[in-house]
Image 1 (tube, one colour):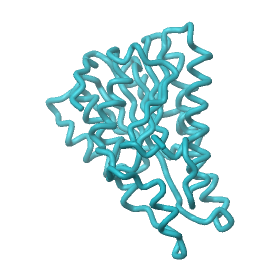
Image 2 (tube, one colour):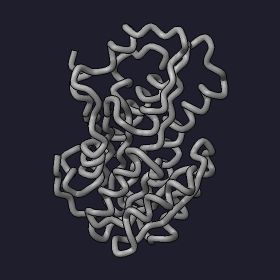
Image 3 (cartoon, rainbow, N blue to C red):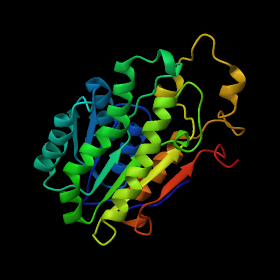
Image 4 (cartoon, rainbow, N blue to C red):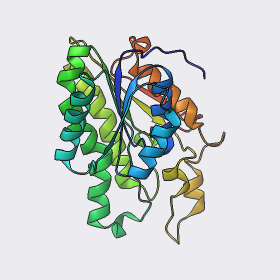
Length: 253
């Protein structure tokens, strides 16, 4: 879906930018003219993304951070604004998933899922909102079709993404009279490192997994990145408090 957006002169911060959807979104935003702060725990992946944007493109900043640390989230926004002097879009794309039986999930895996998928967008948004109000910018959160349907072996992931949708809506209402837009996208399964690297419990029931696999196959990463870029840009001005499903029909019925 080729959506034409103009982010010339604007600055976007993209988490999860070392690969997958985060990388695709960073590339789309840069091609739309935005300077981009690339954030991930994977430094080598960030440098690859930066190289793909190229020296002749907009300015880039590589920022390595463990977003499970609230202080690292705050520092990420502070450093981006210090480098570029402004912030126009925060794209919370970094995410993790652990496919396990609920009764065997470790506390560490549960806490990591909540920290990256839900708490990090909160802390990043909290630090970014004052700057986004000044620039009349946008927050775009990456939820999932898992926010709307129960998925076997993914209770923590579903909970984190459902929480992210409600956080998006609540923040949107809180700032409905202020010059900021806050939205989310909810993709279905995609060909990303997270999706392709998932492992199921050895005794997983395949018929349960097929219930949320989708009849039309996987969603194209570039299509989701296009949608995020639209919501992050001035062309997305009509969207506020929305969670746009882009899941090839998984949640249709």
